[in-house]
Image (cartoon, rainbow, N blue to C red):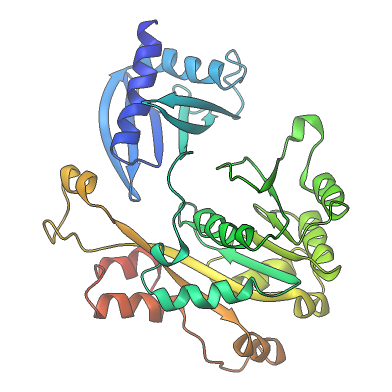
Length: 349
């Protein structure tokens, strides 16, 4: 094994050991930074020579089937590695920055034990409201939140519940982040002409109870999702929005008619991952604390469904009662579970 192979594996292994979600190789003039994101904090791990960084990036590009000679355009790829008997998927992307190419790696561990929804949430009562939405036979359930806020983990946990109840579930993903037994998973491949629209058309003929779309990102996908919900399927997806009301605004931006929105949307969920107060130091954690703590972050949810959703659709200009993200985060702060800085991190006062 070459020195670069050993170095590339060592970087991945270190990231897994400290529970990092992302790795970055950022170029500078005479050297490059290797950074890792742990619980939304970006840590400077080491500084390497520019020549070594270029070799590392080329190595990752080669292994993820990118064009190693193309440095003028962004590229995306993926690969699966087995390190210490743990299967890990890596989602890799490059960016043509100055003075050299930069690289980002999203780490997607494959053999972690499935986490029940109750163990993901700061307030267990919220999970009952989300789980109740899966009892609906048809409709559109939308999740929103920043990248890395745990939307996919929440959805996978919900799907595990549904698989136990013998539901046929087809998940359309870009890319597949985690393989789940019993779940029919289809990966988008734009190069092969396999886009969301084509897969959704085929999925509707495959007798699904639940259809999962990893993200509604354009008008055509939004229209197909609404159509699927209108033809008797439960559709679950994510959408880029700051909160639940923002989900509706995004559907309108995609050209979905108001009547269709009211007829199909059964629930809106916006979530954030909050850092728990450290039981070891109760202050700013050292890297050692971050590694040894069993639970570092838990999710809080803003949920609009049932009567509050009906009230919003009847007259969005009037006030309606629901538990907003602001209320939920402030509740966590008041009870001493999370730091006050979490409010300012995720919301504006």
